[in-house]
Length: 197
Ligand SMILES: Cc1cc2nc3c(=O)[nH]c(=O)nc-3n(C[C@H](O)[C@H](O)[C@H](O)COP(=O)(O)O)c2cc1C
Image 1 (cartoon, rainbow, N blue to C red):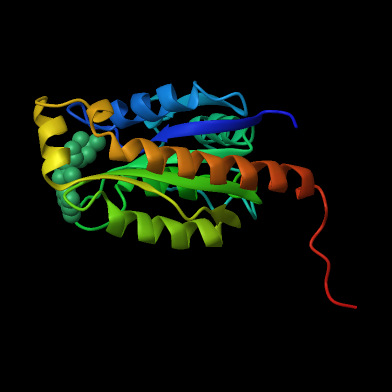
Image 2: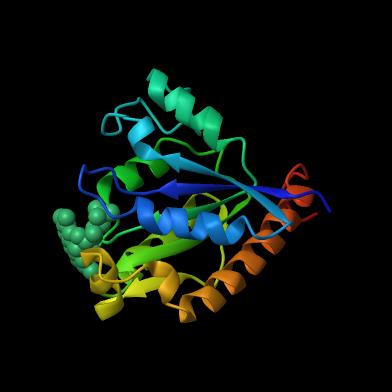
């Protein structure tokens, strides 16, 4: 089976952000496997305005050049790992905006989540799972949640994420499922959805 192409999306952009650390951690774990390739997509490299098109690009081509570049990049992958924080119990605005700026490029692809924060971004990730369904994606079951005192210790620099050994099994389970779904959808993607006879 060919390797699936997975994008690791860093979902926050602020100057003092933490998000690139868990992105690096999951990238290093994925690099030990032979069944996928990864590329980190940093939303800082795609500074799109708050959504300002006549419609979703499901209906009308986007005019903004950065949005066009983002859509082209998103289209390259079979699946995604979204690395996210939680801002006021919700999805960070830059991440939601980036999701909204593409549509067909997300369709029929799998998505997994790595969250961090007091509850491991669990509440933001539940919302992201619903958005994924609207984007015609398959959100996979197992997520990685770096949470509570462990998150604080890593955030303060007292510990490394790699020292939290229990996360490794979660990451392995998540990647196993993501690879399976990405491969299954890659094979099926070109088949049209059939209406019942
Ligand atoms: C505007 C804002 C809202 C936040 N709201 C929450 C929250 O609802 N739940 C939570 O666990 N952490 C919350 N936090 C703390 C974040 O988990 C923590 O700052 C984390 O590092 C943010 O991700 P980032 O550094 O990648 O931006 C919030 C942080 C910010 C900046």
